[in-house]
Length: 126
Figure 1 (tube, rainbow, N blue to C red):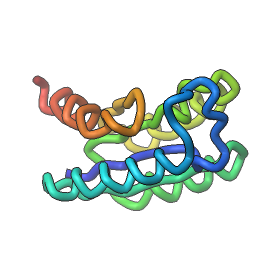
Figure 2 (tube, one colour):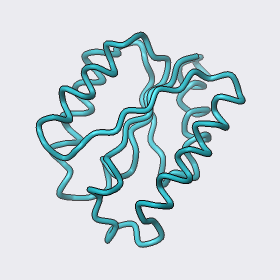
Figure 3 (cartoon, rainbow, N blue to C red):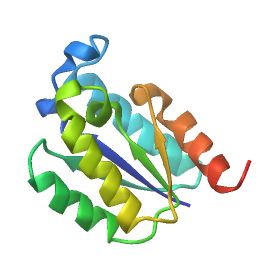
């Protein structure tokens, strides 16, 4: 199973809406999560985007790099009100370029594995 994780570069995130997080914690936890997913047999591709128009090109390259079974869109893309337009662009690119993938969301980096499991269960019809 192939999983794509999409997140905003932690150096660019305003963590005001997520005070329990900071850039260092996001990086450390993200690495641990990717390792855990790999141990469970998932092939994980990480896509780190910026907050501008370059995000579309970076995400397009990632999405066209192969078929994905599940796409995780991180909280940094979704929960910051100023990222609404970015979130819309991300959703629409995933919808267009990975139509067979389920889309799932985490609430913070620590529950990404659970989000992937939910997404793959949906894909399997459970």
